[in-house]
Image (tube, rainbow, N blue to C red; front, top):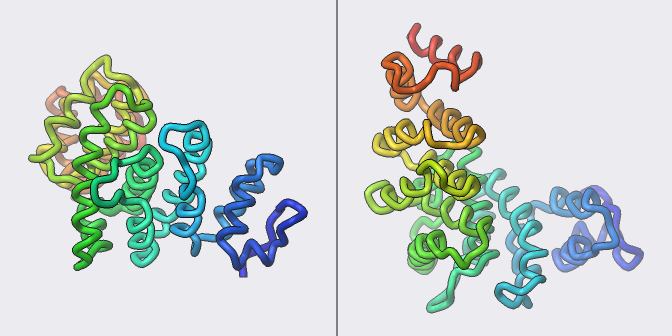
Length: 274
C-alpha cells in the first residue's frame, strides 16, 4: 500500500491509496503545499493514465485551468515514462493520444512529448523504438500515434502556441525518422532561436538514432546557448558511435575543447584507450 499522504480533511490516506479520483482531488487542492501534492503523484504510480484522464476530462482547450493543470499532467506523465512499464505506458498513450479528427491539445503534447518520450529517453531508450514496442500490434494506437506526430510537427511551428508547448511538440518529433523530421528540427537549433525551442530541438535530435542527427548536433554547437550546448554535448556521449564522432570533431578543432569540461574530456580519453 502507498504511504499515507498529507490530504484535506475530506480525504484519508487509505482513500488516496485506492482511488485515482481521490488522488486527483489532492492534486487539485491548492490549499495543500506543492510538496504534499507531489507526494500524491509519487505515491501512486499505478494511476498515471487514470489521473491524467481525471485531470483533463473537463478542460476547455487554452483555458486557464488547462495551463494550471499542465505542470501536474507533466509530472504524472514523465514519472510514467521514467518507470518504463510497458502496460502503463500503453494506457498513457490510450488516454493522451487525440482521436479521429480531434486536434493535439496542449496537455496532450505535454503528456506525450515531455512525458512519455522524455521519460523513456531518460531511461536510455531511443523513443521511436520504445514507442513501437509499447504500441506493439495495436492498430488503433499506431494510427493515433502517427497522426499525433504529424499534428506535433504543425504545432511546433505554430507561433500562436505557447512556447513551452511548442517545446513538447518538438520533443515528440524525436520519435520520428531523421529523413522525415530532421530538416524541421535543424531549423530550431540555429543561432538566435528562442532558447526553449532550441532546447526542444536539441533533445529531439538527441533522441534520433541516426548518424545524420549526430552530424547536425555537432554542426549546431557553436550557435547554441550555453545550457543547450551542454545538453547537446551530453547527448553526443549517449553511445560509442556518437562519442567517437565527438572525439573526431574535438581532435580536428571543429568543436572547442573548452566547451566539454573535465568529465566529458575524460570520457573521450577513456574511449581512446579502447
